[in-house]
Image (tube, rainbow, N blue to C red; front, side, top):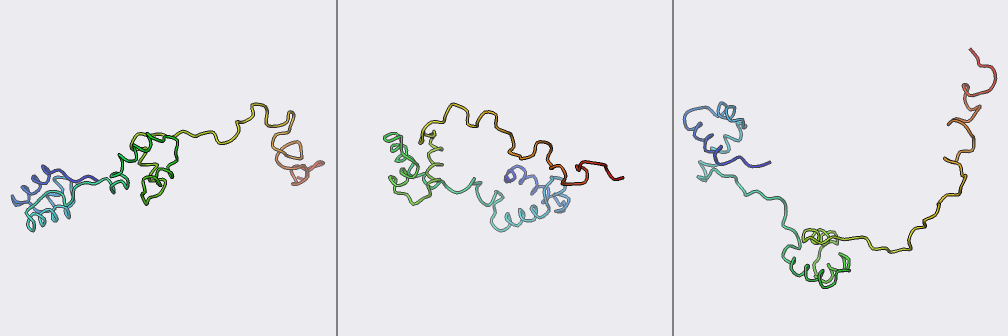
Length: 155
């Protein structure tokens, strides 16, 4: 959730200083009464009306300070794995962390063929049955329930 603007904070405090009650100010500006009380208290105690802390979008990336070293390693030896780059940099982080750092730097990875290529021919024998069932029709074998038994039906 984003912090309220300084302009809104100033207008709320001006309305509260004009003699309007906290609940009325909150309703007029579409904020909670608790927020109005905390804003007044913060101004009274610290003299500031801005947000308590600047907005952050999460922790600092683990390899942000080693981005240049990582970039040089990739350009010098492009075929290594993320685990090998981690060992070369000497960072005590997970392989996934190195992979994410490389993605942030704009490097992408492609799968390399590790086995023999797939066959181009058919993989199942011609004329094979589909589904592998032993009985020919329907999902219930004939005679397993009263509605599939041969003969006269009881009424």
